Image (cartoon, one colour):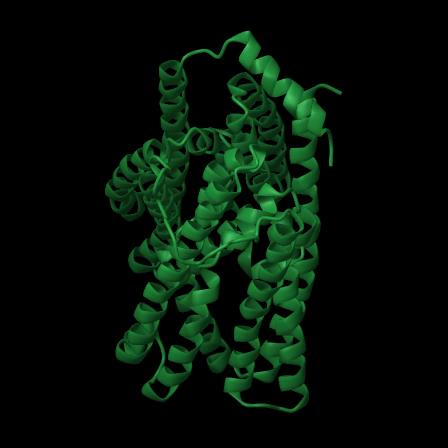
Length: 452
């Protein structure tokens, strides 16, 4: 088996491992949500969703994608057995996690206490919401995830969300059995992300220790020194992720503001089904990043390009299949999953799946840019596309309703794919072609590693 084929097979195997974990998590998740819904009345269930969504949104917005820093700046020193530099990368990543966590907790607590009435809960619920906001500090931690991806330990990552959901299920079951009040369910839901944080943290530290990478490690020391461009990279990946989260929520809020809550509900349901259909393909992304980082560290630009082409071809096949399923079975699928009352979301779901398919087709473009430490260029594309999208969104929704929102989403996905493709072409051209010896060296190194 060639080195490139070996890498591609490993990407697919790791994505499959993550998919298995997500499937288990989805089943457990439905169970704890069902128990909670039966233990609380609809009003308090809604409050639980509002509080947890508020904390999750803040966590995602302030979160540095520190796992990206671990991969892109840690792969080379790991392969070269440069322990001092690798430990510096880990120390910087931990600093990013802690800093963003503290910022998120501060905004979360203040927001929950001062603006609860605007966010949907009363003054007597504000202390509970503020306490739940403390979980933001574990939501923003991604160093352990980055280490496990770098070490190719995806089987442990597959269990991360399942651990969180299992803890929530146990806590919700106890609360339901004891007919406990609202705060007990909130506590059970808070325990989930804490358990997942401890789970990946302990395993990541064990993996570090087994490789001798904890010897002499200090929390205090140099951060960005001798890591060229690391701060620019960290901020670019942070802003890009925050923009992606905001992008998702803005369109739902806009539909609700212009067309009413019922239409917003149909839009959200269609989006959930579309995202669910696209999820298996998107799981290739976290499996792709560490392989690209390692190939770059070995100087294998040619191998990086070949891997990206292989992923793009696979993405194209998946995208075509998704569109075919939606066009043929969209309404029956919605009726089966959500009930006949929601089949009205089928038309807009076609737009949403089309946008998701375009994103899948362009799946390797942004990871390639990030792996070439050009995250700032990917961010630039996102900023331009998002600005144009926001300018077009309100007129399109006002004149065409949900079809206008769908058209805007497809247009944004198309513009994002074209923008990333053109930017990557320019970046590859400016980086120059690798010579054959360099590519051969990368292939030999990967071949020596073999499949794990």
